[in-house]
Amino acid sequence: MELGRGPLSVSPKHALNAICPYFTMFPLEFPLRILERRARSAELVLDPFAGRGTTLYAARQRGVRAIGIDCSPVAVAIARAKLAKVSTGDAVKLAQSILAAEAEPVLPDGAFWERAFHADTLKDICRLREGLLSMAESDAAVVLRAGILGILHGPRTKVGSYLSNQMQRTFAPKPDYALRFWKKHGLTPPRVDVLGAIERKLERVAAGRYLTSKVGWSDVHQGDSSRADCFGGVPSGVDTVITSPPYYGMRTYVADQWLRHWFIGGPARVEYANVGDLPSSGKDDFCEGLGRTWANVAARAKDGMRMFIRFGSIPSRLVDARKLLLRSLEASGSRWRVVSVRNAGNAAAGKRQAGQMRDSANAVDELDFHAVLE
Image (cartoon, rainbow, N blue to C red; front, side, top):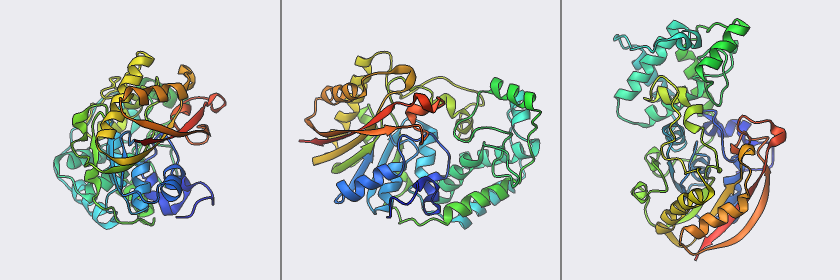
């Protein structure tokens, strides 16, 4: 793996890691450098806050088994693609078979849906949604679902790369805001060749270079990592953890991904619940919740396990991130020895947590922690 020749986020070799635009906690370079320079002997990598699966993808590229846990079903759907076998042919054939179904799909109604998608496009999207929800998981289904999530909404293009009216790629706007924006600018939803858009997306993904995952998409689990029962699918012997927990006060994951959440089976409306999120009512509760995750990780750890954490704060909830993270390690009741704490720069360039929907001028420096379990 070559680093240092431009950002890997735009490299065609790593198109699978970019299968769906999503706010990421760290760039691909972060876990790759750790696995290449500081954890070369890693055999079992865990990310208890997997997000879109960047750590899992990096481990796959190093030929290391990786396991992820995340409370967001959207994040899990995207992360699973990072460990799936990529076959454009199989995924496209699956899309074709679903779209060929004669049964009429159930369509969501309301002003937002009428203005967000062309009627024919929406019908195809709903047919794909129902088809994927009704079938058993497979590599083809996992990759197809993530590919559709990646093109479900985004900017209008001449070739029809995205299926929606003008939207952001990384998160879905709230319906009232979107309607005002479209009306103000006179924007109507384009009719998009849905199968063609899927084929173009998957062809780009399949053009990358990927090692075969040792186990596959089944190693990504949905759950709250602060609960011990969510570690049932994690074997003992974890030797490396690379992760980035939610920053204190960051509680918009579900609402920001509401449209993708709808596609994978959620309601056709914005939900502001935060099931599985770390408590942010106070610093003590946050540290205790995060400490429970570190305790659960320690229970599956191999002696001398090393943990690498990127952590920071968001502009609206400035805290001493260093102190908060160290307190959480103490709260775990496990014997963590902090090897180093380093400044990782700020998140302005990477659309990471600290810069989410904020002016980049307000981005806060993040920290990289390295700890060893003794």
